[in-house]
Image 1 (cartoon, rainbow, N blue to C red):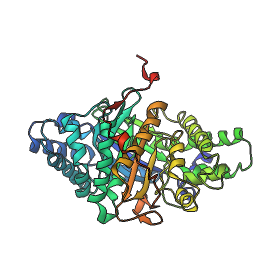
Image 2: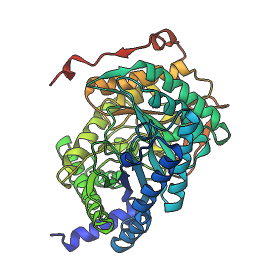
Image 3: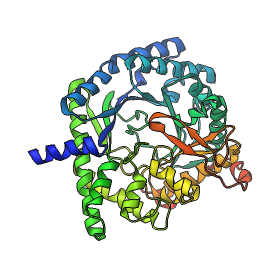
Image 4: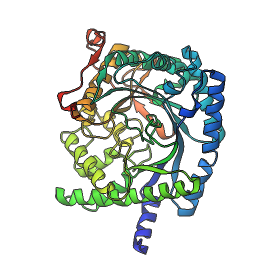
Length: 454
């Protein structure tokens, strides 16, 4: 039973501590839209998504009004488009037509983003996969709400270095195609190792082929709530600290479970998972970096940062997993730079570097996220950064990702404004020594020895 004290406590979290449900994401299978006729594929995709999602935004607004819980985003994820378009698409431009259809229906049903313009190529690429990947720069430049992801590695298969090399080129080309908007297209493109099938967070969301025809996934967030709770135990030992984070994560996740169940009931769609990640925003007081400072660091990036983040991530998972019948997605702490004011402050102060962020990704939930780098960074260097991050995910049996934004025409010392939840970011320096010979070897980095568990 929920008592009146818990109701009052949750209201205070919402009003004063930036507690929100970050997203309701409706996953939709497009496997029944496959056809050899591209025009028919686009028509089927449009009607399948429209019929499934026409009430999604209204449902989110109803739940928000009924329970007083802010629901920031309503989103859609679909089956990776490289699988859906494979029979009909003959050129990258054919895939772009599907991106346009996704964008059109996203606008018409009113969602913020639609994810799934994706390819899964951890072991190799089909012709359709390669065409979709090569179409990404154009697709992201001519659409507004489409998000794209490519999974290039896994613990079971190793790292597809041909795909890693290609993605370095694609990211740079996407930056060029969207340079008039400060290379914003790259903010909608993420490269994964061990991508989860049930991720409600963009830009990496897609509807896995093992999922039901439709499913509701919810992503919660509450960095401000955790920070406020930790302020009350300042100076206490680690046991008290950990217990406080666990209890707070439990309360935050219960809110997500409530919203997920209600959305499932209203839409008559099965409940999938609650992703209990701490996802920051540019709002003051809604920062993962500020939590790390409250734990005892002068700035994120100071010695002890990786240990503090590991502690935070683990306690969030331990507390949240008891609050929902199904926890999934990424679940833990996100460390995007542009979306977290505390991270921005740490970079500006010189406390946080790209290399330290990479170390932090060994223990957080995602990876190198929303990091602006100089626009003259080479494709090979971007591929090398991707390869490093994929190796962390592969060896540690965890999801890692890269969302780099080479801002064309800007360099270290400048900042770039993305707006809204994407925030702004200082351009971070990148190691200038070459890895071109490494990236150009081609082929696949084998899976680690501990992957053989069959």
